[in-house]
Amino acid sequence: MTDHTLFFYGTLMAPQILHRVIHGSPTPEKWQRDLLTFQPAVLHGYKRHRVRGADYPGIIMGEENLSGGAGAGVWGTVVSGLTDGDVYRLDLFEGSEYTKERVRVRVLRMETGEGKDDGRLREVLDGAGEGAEEGEEVDAVTYVYVAGRERLEDREWDFEEFKRDKLAWWVGADLSEL
Image (cartoon, rainbow, N blue to C red):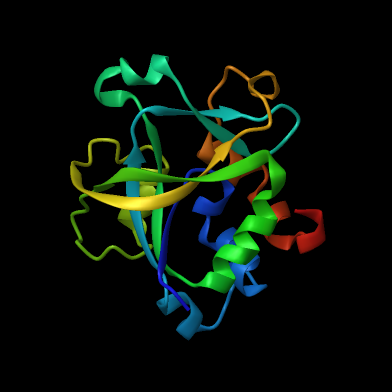
């Protein structure tokens, strides 16, 4: 039951979807929620794209990101406290379109200092908190898109748009549909 740390940048940034995948319910027991720590973070050197015909994104490494300045990178969530079983279920969920890679992400400093999924975390993930300062660098694993650049749109995937238009379906969907 090893403690894993993963970086999520798409649908799994929504705690309800993450819990649905690893615990089978978007609203797990309190003890299950308490095992996980959520922190906003940024992954530099990658870019997030919409996957054509899908509700989810993919990230790829690219030169255009490396020279993009302070705004370059992918905003997301670092989640720690994941078990071997959780990672197994996440691997099944991500499927063959992705491969796991070890990365170094910068945790974003929060005013509350809590590190839990609170309102400030939501602001950062929604883009309203983009002024948050980068803090410590941590090792994590993330899922990098490998199903072909031609399947990615040039447009960046938008978490706010996903929450508004698709989150309710994803949370209510049968896991076999995801």
